[in-house]
Length: 170
Image (cartoon, rainbow, N blue to C red; front, side, top):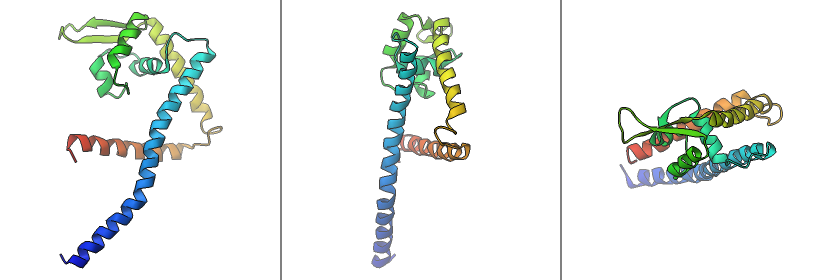
C-alpha cells in the first residue's frame, strides 16, 4: 500500500473519530446520569410514602431479585446490582428483614438469597411505580414505543461491544 493511500486512510479514520467521539461521550454521560436519575425517582417514591427505612439502591436490588433465589455473585453477573459493595447491601437487607439468606444445599460455601414478604412489598412498590410510568411515559415524557425500540437496540449493541472489549481484550 502506498504512503499516500495510508495517509488518506489515517485521515479518514481521524475525521470519523472526531465525529464519533462527542456523541459516544455524550451517550456515556447520559447512561450514567439516567441511572442516577432513576435512583432519584425511586427515592422520591419512597419519600412520598414516608419510607426512610430503605434506600433507592436497596429497593432496586429487591425489585430485580423478584421471586428468584440466587447468590450474591449472581446478582452482579445477571446485572441486577450495579455497585461494588453488594455484600454490604445484602447484609443490611437481611438484617432489616427484607431478605432471607441460607446456605446452599449443594454447595455449603454458597449463600442463597430470596425476598421475605417485606422485601416483596418493596418490590411491589417499585413495580407499581414502573407500571405508572408505562402509562405516562409516552404522553407526558414524549418517548414513543418506536423510540424506545431504537434506544434499546443501540444500548444492547453497546453492551455487547463493551462485553467483547473485556472478553476478547480488544
